[in-house]
Image 1 (tube, rainbow, N blue to C red):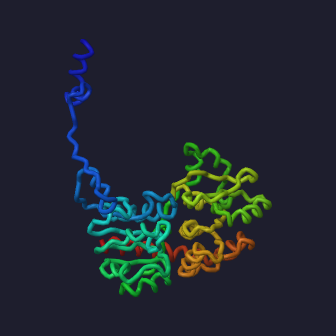
Image 2: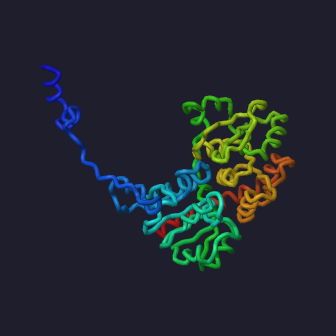
Image 3: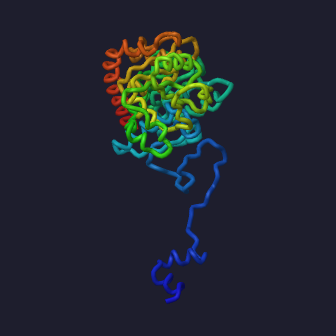
Length: 354
């Protein structure tokens, strides 16, 4: 039997015709969006309507672990309760109901990505998902859209006070990332390209945030022979970290909340400038401390921890932050349980509002 005869006999005609170039699949015509706004990902498939709910965050274009985690946990919960969803961002503003945030995506500055933030707040019956907010920005015209939203939730009291002028009911809730799941340490060490973590042992290392303010803390801990794993929660910021002179384990280019949460779950303690690394620690009931100073980043962390009744976890970079973490271990255990329960209630409210 010739190759041609065998091909015809054993390969379906549609595949045979495709090999010969006679078969052309029927695809919906592609029509690029006129502008970046009002374009949903499912439009690329020629589908103008969908029953799936958009979850709008900066995660599709901004590799911040906290934003990726927030969107991921929200979508996982919606899926678990039978609500299909998809990941999108500010350009997808024409859907009937959008779950917006969390993250500090609400703000109206005129510089940087301030003009983009405006586009995260479209008119409609939408849902604000434990969002952050550039305190003091925005006019009545900008924020008046909130009065029509189905459910508005923010992550601290000051944001609630600011937005309360434009919305009658505001829920003050933890970030969904509190329920981030983590890959077990033994599995992480077996993953391709993670062989360098094989020296880690359960509860035998400290996770520390890659940030210039943490380098002094890291140097002191290394003098005490404490193994350190440096995690980059904000790769977009390109925070400098001098690894050449120090014996640190620094996973680079890591954009996986599951892996970072897994490293947190198995750590001895956590030290951070990042809000979401603190949130990962809270969710895991893991002793942690955070640096407090006069920057907007620190103010955001301080407000969140005050709401969670964990403000005692804040310290100066010259303090013994490891002792601070352990001195408040019992306080954290109660707060962790409370935060996880509140987060679950919040996600239930999001689902009900949909």
